[in-house]
Amino acid sequence: MSANPVDNRRVLLTEWFWPQCRERQCELRKALEENIKCSAITEIVLFCETFDGLGFNSHEKVRLINVERKRPSFRELFVFANHEYEGWVVIIANNDISFKRAAFDIKMSRNDVFCISRYESLGVEEIWFDDYRDGIYRYPSHVFSQDAWMFISPKELCGGHFKMGEPGCDGRLAWLLSMSNYTLSNPGKKMKILHYHQSLERPYHGRLKLPTPYAHVGEKASKKPAIIFHLTGQNPKTQFTLFKFWRWDLFRSALSSRYEFFFTVKFLMSKL
Image 1 (cartoon, rainbow, N blue to C red):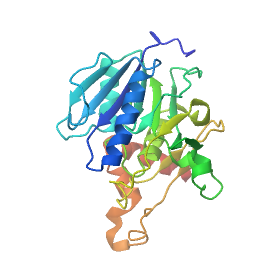
Image 2: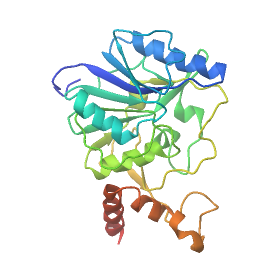
Image 3: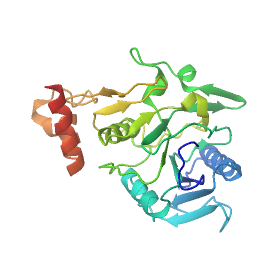
């Protein structure tokens, strides 16, 4: 890294749980084992709902934190990184992401946050996300999906009381970071992180998405990410339902936290 942090140590923050699906278990174990072997990652912190499936009680590279089924929010992860790993390069990632092929020689400043899109690992094939899934409107697919976030600690995340994997979390997180005046970029194709999820288990499928605004961060450099906002919401059941206005994205966004109230008002005022 050319950011001149305190040192070049990198810590990966991720979660650990043990699904019932055997195929899914293999995917999570494979990602963890490859990240342990990755020489560019100095330390791994696992926020563990359970210790089942880990196969070890201790490892010099892995720090285990028992969360007793209370998964940390993004805000809690940022606060943890600020307190425990100030000056480090911090990576927050979904637990089915492997960094075995990742290139870490990408320039980063202290104000940067990398929102990193993935390659799909399908057996021996590694497919860039745009080639795996069709884009929406004029945007390529990777713009709407990130699975890892990298920055030099400390970073102040205002709001963010939602968890990894919740529908819309990547766009919502990017918007909060953008409103906090951090510089967002997506080095996805250059960095090459791998996603292991061929199993059919999708615990969040069909759940209500987090409220917009979302910021969508693509590979093409731009000063500001594209912002998507749905006044009434993305769920057809809540769109244009005047009698359930409290379920509109406008109100859900503003009532998420005091910071998000301020950001939502500021965003709306900028559109007037």
